[in-house]
Amino acid sequence: EKMCSRCHAVGPTGRSPNKLAPPFRHLGENKLYDPDFVQRLQDGYSSIHRAMPTFRFDRESAEAVASYLKAIQTKKN
Image 1 (cartoon, rainbow, N blue to C red):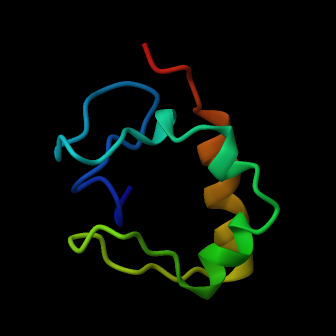
Image 2: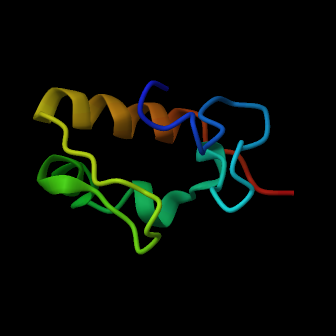
């Protein structure tokens, strides 16, 4: 929440403050269930979007982020 809610809706409801940033509940299985996702969070996760900073997590935090994101996924209407 601290790192991402400036742009993304980070919970199970609500709109993203930045209309170009997808709500975390709509990220989808392809990204989150990729076996390398936790490692990418540790190595430094970034995006092609210039406004998104690179984030680095320790192993425990990366696993917690991945678990949370998986738990809130919904199908985009």
